[in-house]
Each structure stands twice: as structure tokens, then as C-alpha cells.
Length: 359
Ligand code: SF4
Image 1 (tube, rainbow, N blue to C red):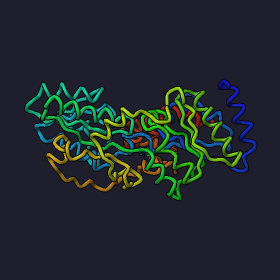
Image 2: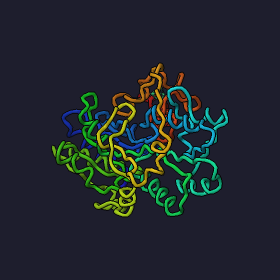
Image 3: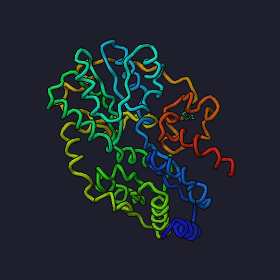
Image 4: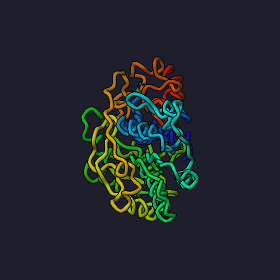
């Protein structure tokens, strides 16, 4: 079916629903694509898409940011990071502010860029901010393995790698979050395969579809979700078979598992989620800056009305945040959801305001 036919199918199926449904697109790449293609506006009124916690920068908590900023100010450090971390507010400052005050903060385009930075600056501690999901942890792990093989001793990670399935389990258990099905991130499933998501069907009987990121792929995934709702069925469907294999990518997983082990992790808005993060194994502890140079930070409580936590859980849309578009905009972000290109608030700001005007 082409896009037009899929939309017709969605409309037909929606008429068979006995009540409105809410599907969560878990990842920020889906959120952006859904906006870019105007999919939200095309859906029938009784089919709602809500955005989830799938932007790694957004779910990174203040403690991590405050640590990154504190390390940046040590004087003998170089912080290497992807660009979208620069503006993320910690409890009192940001890396961008630290850089303006003289800290050496550099943007990298691949974690492996850090190898050259470390070699070129032997008198500095180079700290890579490893923030991401299953998609990025293999490259962070590859950096550590490469540094070990090259006997580079001034390269470290400040790691906050996270795992998506435990966050979904937490969302399902949260009564303030009501979701009838999940649009699962294709790029995460490329690595993990289907197995880590099977609990959605087996334990919770919630429909879930692994989807690609083009309009046609997203629309097809929505038809699968609707079909399951209409037929009172709940399966895990791989609708991205050209890219996602059931077994995922064992090579990428094995390098992650070599360097990392599962650990509890703190998610913005969701608190500590058991076994939802990755910490470096003991044999790689010399690359863990928190082991080599431990520090304690005490993030100040938030004094703004930022509601990133509720936005990330799909409890509210950014439009419901009193700061959206007023005090908070991409040039002056109050919360991380307005910073990253994959942040829900940034996506609503860039693409969603026009659609809101139509409602
Ligand atoms: S609009 Fe800004 S202040 Fe409001 S939830 Fe989003 S990031 Fe936070």
C-alpha cells in the first residue's frame, strides 16, 4: 500500500475502534519524522500519537550534567561531546557556559575522534561524554577497546548509556501514562533485535511495532497497531524487516557487553530505573573518569516550571508547559527537551506550532 492507501486504511480501522487510542512513538527520530510529514494532523481524531522518552540527551539528568561541567572546569581536562550536549542545562550552568568561561569543550562527530585528541594532548585528561541508547553504546565501547589496544592512558568516559526496554516497563507501570501501543525505534532494534521487546506482548499484552522512519513506514506501523486494537490482539511486529533482523546485530552487542554491564540508572522524569543503564566493567575501570577521579555534585532543586519529566513520559504535550515558546525556546532552552534536535519540545517548536493552530 502507498501512503494514501495506508491513510485510508487508518481511517477505516479507526471507525471500528470502540474508544480513542493513544500510541507512543518512543524515539525522538520518529517524533521529528512524524512532524516533518504532518502525520499527526492526518490521523483521525480518535487516534493520538504521544511522544516518549527516546531522546538520550533529554533523559540525562542534572547530576550527570553537573558532573560534566565540574570535570570541564578541572583545568587539565578536555571534554569531548556531541554538539547537542552543549546547551543542555545542568542545575546551575551548561557546558556552553563553561566553555565561554575558558573550559576546553570540543565537539566530536564520532567517539573515535577522541583517540586523536588524546594522542595530541598527552598532558590533558580527555573525557568523552558517552550519552545514548543501544544505538550508541557499541561505538562508546569500541572507543574504550581501541584506547586500551593503543595503550592510551589519558582517555576516559563519563558514561550515561541507557537501555530502552526497562524505560518502557516503567512507563507501563506508571498510572499517569496511558498508552495503547508502542511504535518502537527501528535503529535500537537493529542492534538489540526483537527479544528485549517481547515482554510487551508476553507480559503486558500491549501491541508494539518496530518501525522505520519514512512516512510510509510509520503509517504502515500505525495500521498494524490499529489492526491489533480493533481485533483485540497484542503482538510484537517487525515492520522494518529490511533493516531489523530478529536476532539484531550480535557483533555490536558483543562489543557493548565486553565493556559494559547492566546497572541501575537515573532517567529525567522517571527516577532510578533498575538495570536500565550500562556501567563500565571493572577491567575497564581505568577508562571510567568517575572511578579515576571521583567527584560529588549536589544539583540544586529546579526553580523553573519546566515539565520535561511529564513531556518525556507522554503525560503532557509541550503545549501544556507554561514556559513553552515564552521563556523557553531553542535559542534559550530552559529544559533539555528544547535542546536536542530530537527533543520533543524542540520538535513541537519547530514543526508543531502550525499544526496546533489548526486544532
Ligand atoms: S518547553 Fe521548555 S521548559 Fe517546558 S517542558 Fe519543554 S524544555 Fe521544559
